[in-house]
Each structure stands twice: as C-alpha cells, then as structure tokens.
Length: 448
Image 1 (cartoon, rainbow, N blue to C red):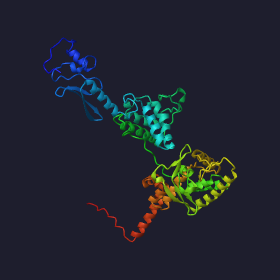
Image 2: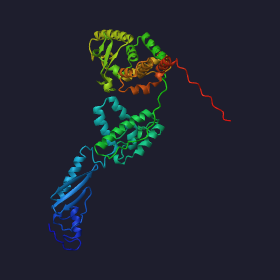
Image 3: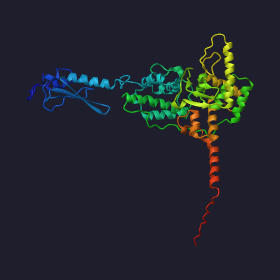
Image 4: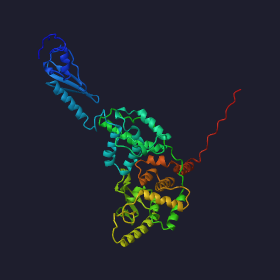
C-alpha cells in the first residue's frame, strides 16, 4: 500500500474520498487498494466494532465489546476481520435461543419451562410455575421483547394481581396472545401465589442473563406482597380425633392413611409413595426416600432433608399391621390385573394413589363427621408439628421428623405452638431465681 500523500481526486473518482468511504462499507473497491490520509479513521458498518487498518503492520484490526470485555482481532483484509468479529459474537451468544434483539418473553419463558423445569424438576414444581405464567403473565407480556421488559412493569403487574384486576386467560395462541373465548372473571391472587409466580419468572430471566440474552434481570429488587402468617390453626385436636373416630366407625378404607398422617406428619405425596420395603413393622420405624408427583409417578424426595427415618407411634403401628393384613387378603382374592408396586397406600388395583382423590375423600369424610372446619391432608402435618413443638420436643428434632431443611422454617410456621414450652421455661427460671428478692421501686423525690 502506498505510504505517500495521495492525490486529491474529484469526489466519486477512483481513490477519492467518496470511494474510500464506500469501500469501508463494502460497496466499492477492496480497502487494500484505497489510499487514505495518515490518521484518517474509516467509517465502520453496523455491528462491525472498532475496525481500522494498522499501517505499520499492514493488518486490519478490530475490537469488539462483549459483556464489558474488550476482544482484539486482526487479519490481512477487512473482510477477514469482519468474519472474525461475527464469529466472536456467535460464540459469545451460542447459548442464546435466538437473536437477543428479537426474542420475546413468551419464547424465553416457555423455553425455560419446557427445557429446564419440566426436565429437571418434579411435575408438581412444573405445574406450580406453568399455570400462573400461562394464565396470567403471558397474556400480558408474552409478545413483548425481553429487552423491553422493565422492573416497574412487573412490580405494577404484581400489584394488579393482588388487587384482582387482571383477567386470567386459560387459552393462548402459539405466540402467547389469548384467544377471545379464553377469559375468566378476574380474581385476586394470594400473596404466596404471587411470590411463587415471581420466583419462577426470576429464575427464567436469570437464565437469560447467564446466556447473555439480557444484561440484567428485570425481576431483581421488586417489592412483593407480604404473606400474612396465620396466628393459630383453624382446627383443634378434638376435630381431628372426631374425624378419625368417625372414619374408623364407618370402616373407611382410607382410615389407616388418616391415622398414619396424623401420627407421623408426612406430606401426602410422601405417604402415598411409601413402600412396604421401607417399613419395619418389628421395630416400628420407616424410611422416607420417595415422593409422589401429580401424574402419579414415584420419584425421589424434593430435598436432602426429605430422606429421614421416623419412628411409629403404637397407634400408627397397629393401624399399619391391620392394613397390611387387609391388603394381603385383597391381593390374594384379586385373581388378575393387580399391579403390585409394593406401595403401602395403593389403590384397589395396586397402582399409586392420587393426592386429589385423597383430598376429595377427606372432604367428604369431614362433612359426614359433621366437623365444622374443612380439614385437608396437609392439616394433619401442621397439627403433628404443632403438637411436637408444644410437647417440648427440641426444635431440631422436630424439624428432622417433619423433613424441614432448616429448623427456622418450623419456628416461622408453628411459632404459636411454643407458648407451652415458653411457660415451662419461665417456671424453671422462677424455680432457680425464686429465692432472690426484687429490688425496691425507687420513690420519686419531690423538688421544692
């Protein structure tokens, strides 16, 4: 390439200024044959990065900024450096679902649901996230570009959900927009439901940040509705005992299940997935290592704390022994078609039970027993935990029995049950310090 001062040709002539500009943009002659003044910076094209010719080395140089980092590239021709810049961008965005400037919220969130949650989480977790996202979130934001979604929009949306001004849509088109006939009456969502929706959205957008689709998570730092803790349980021990007595008197086939839940505090999914191989009727212990999903598939428990050994009370052990004898007699009488999965609380054909069927069965039993309070299977767990804490069992042991990872969870949920142990602690303190005399109350001195 010539190093001397080029001739000043007329604009548009070969080698003139207009030709030099056009060559940088790829519309005219190659840049290697274009003369330019020393220090003159060529005009770069869209997405080219900083592109220039290094005269000393006789090389084309380019620099591109990606995620705050500067990458330098070089080549013998401008076209070669452009290709390297394009390849660098492609490598950087190789995890992206599509062009980050064109991807919609529906595409991103749906990809996260189907390729992350559905494949790696339990079915219950998938349903917990998918339903509110599909019914409430996507009809509002599905067609919006991810890069255009703002935190203030999400925060305002959560407020509308709490107030009950968002219309749910149960039918959506492929692009995330609602069908005309899929709307339902708008109702307010509970704070816990809104927080669950936020947890899912935050995880989906955080994945987009890791894949460099967006620079920051729009769900970060939002004000969320506060969850009001219930001060006390709506039902009492007498209600549960009345329910169990009525279930036993009418020979309810689910009576062993209700007794087992009340005496162990298991989650209903853990109880329905329990196998006889994990129950030791001689020593009165059983092992929890599996759980039941909404689709009736038996899988691993949700957390490491879910793996636990639990002792049986004498009442629960007696109920299990009677239940096993009944189940063995039923299997012997069932000539063919019985699927023996080794489950303790199986259906009449040996298949895994259903949480929804258990809920419906308990609801009908509550009405027949004329219990004023509606009791669910999870209420047995809440009652068991409260009784353990109220009986003076240390919080760490109670949390291990219930399968909580942290004892603080038990304290937050069942704090009202600690009144008994607190009174006992005060009585013990009085026994130790009761002989001390209280300090006299100072009498205020009147100033004349």
